[in-house]
Figure (cartoon, rainbow, N blue to C red):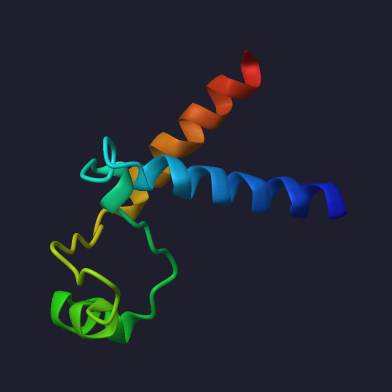
Length: 85
């Protein structure tokens, strides 16, 4: 467990340095955050903006995935294919 925690901490620091490099700072990967498990009362753009607008740089765009079943079925298919390989 110690090794997993140590390697994850190293990965996070390395990834942050990579994404904050001036050559990559404007990329989508450096400016996108996926947040899952949001309670129903916060599933509106206005509520999310109010919650996350305190982040440095603010919030530019909010997308709410309303087709979770479609993504889950495709994810399960991908997992099955990966297992077969």
